Image (cartoon, rainbow, N blue to C red; front, side, top):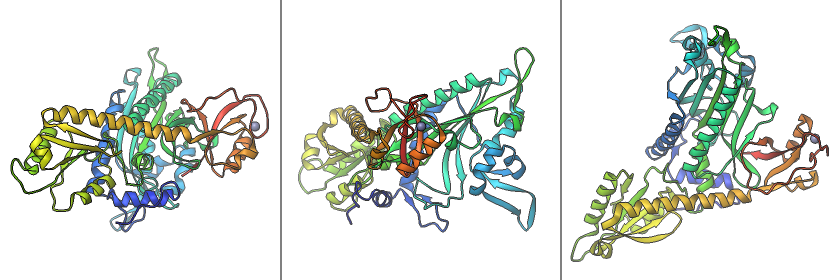
Length: 475
Ligand SMILES: [Zn+2]
C-alpha cells in the first residue's frame, strides 16, 4: 500500500487519498461531483445525521420532506435568491416526450419549495413558531473542481426553515441554531469559529448570514455550516402572513440553518493524519473493531473470546465489527487505522487465557481491559479517546490564527488573519485582495487569541467603527 501524501505539504492530495483509501465514497460515477455512498461511507453519514437530528429536535424542530422539483415561477419570486442561484441550477424541461408548460428546477436549496406551502400552514399567531427541517439531497451545477464531501453537485443537505412572529424572535432562533451547532461540533470534536459574513457575501435573500468556519492549514478555511436571518425578504413575495393577537395581519420573519456532508469532509480534514482517517466516536461507522489473533495451543481460543466480546459490546449498544478474516493481524491493524476506527481490541491466546483484551485507540494509546468489566472499560476508553481527539484538534485550531496589524504583514499570510476593519466595503475588498481570499466577517464566537481593542483599520487606518474581522482563503 502506497504511503499517503504529506498532509502538511500537499493537503488536497492527502485528503483525496484518505477518502479513497478509507473507502468512504466512490467517485467513478459517470456524472462528475455525484459520488456513490459506499457501505462504509453511508454508515458515517447516518451517524453524522443522527447527531444533527438529535440536536435540532432538542430545540423544538420537526422533520418534514418537500419535493425535489420546484416550478420555475415559484423559484423566481425572490429576486436576490434567484440571482444567487441562477447559474447553479439543473432544469427539468420535459416530461416524457413533451415540453413542460412550466419548467421545473431541481432544488439547489428548498426555500422556494417550502414557502408557498408555509403560506398555507401559517394563519394565526398560534401557528408560530413554525420550526421544521429536512435532510434531503440538493443539486447544484458546480463549475469548480469537485471534491468528495467538500464540493459536490449532489449534496446531502440538512436545512432548517422557520417562521417567527417578529425580528427579535427570529434573532433568537438564529442564536438557538448557533447553540445547537456548538453541541454538534463538540460531538464531532471540531473547534470552529462563527462569523457574521460581510454584506457582499451573505446568502442570496438573507438580511444577515452567520457562517461556521474551520481552519485547514496555511490560512485556508472551510465553511461547514450557516444560519441566516431573512427578515421579511421571503415572507413578502411568498405571502406568509399571520393574524396577531390584536387581529392585525403581519408578515413572519424567517430563518434557516444549513449543514451538509461537508461536515464529514471537515472531520476527515481536521482529525485525519498520516495513518489515514480518524473518526470521533459519534460518527465512526464502527466504534470498535475486534481482531482475534489465531494460534494453536491449549485452553480457550482467541476466536471464542472475540465472539463473546462482540456480542456483549453490541448488546451494550456499541457499534462493533469483528475482523476474523485470514489476513495477518498487522494488515488488519493497518486497514482499520486507515479507516479511522476509534478503538481496536486485540485478542490473542495470552489475552484469551487471562480473560482480557489489549485495547489500542486510533491515537496509539494502549491498555489492557478485563473481560469482567469489558463494557465499562470500553466506554471509558472511548470517552477518553474523544477528549484526546478534541484536545489535539483544539491545539491545531489555536495555532491556526494570527493577528495582523499592517498590510505589509498580510503579505506573509499563512494563518487565518485576525485584522482590524472599519466596516467599509472597499477596505474589506482590499483585505480580500491582500490574502487572495475572503473576508470571513466579524466573529460571533470567541477566538483562540488574546485580543486587545483594535486601534485601527488595517487598510485605511481609521479608528472609528473599528472591529475585529477574520480573513482566510476558502478551500
Ligand atoms: Zn478601513
